[in-house]
Structures are given as structure tokens and as C-alpha cells.
Image (cartoon, rainbow, N blue to C red; front, top):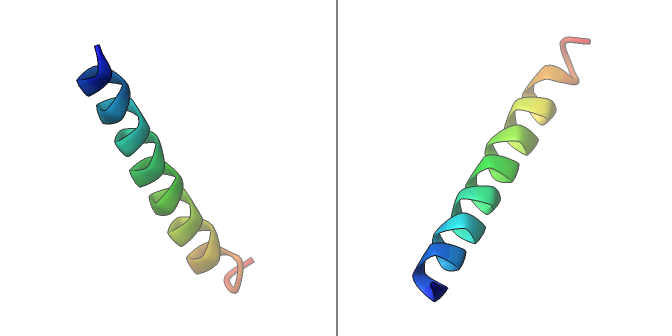
Length: 30
């Protein structure tokens, strides 16, 4: 059960980092 929770947390962190990078790369264009 803990492994699944850790995996979900890691996925969420990776997604948030990717979204942050995309936002920071798109803001100058906008």
C-alpha cells in the first residue's frame, strides 16, 4: 500500500514540475 502512495506522490511531483516548466517557458511568449 505504501509503495502505491509513494508512486502516486512521485508522479504528482513530476507532473507539477513539468507543468511549471511549461508555464515558465510559455509566459515570455504570452
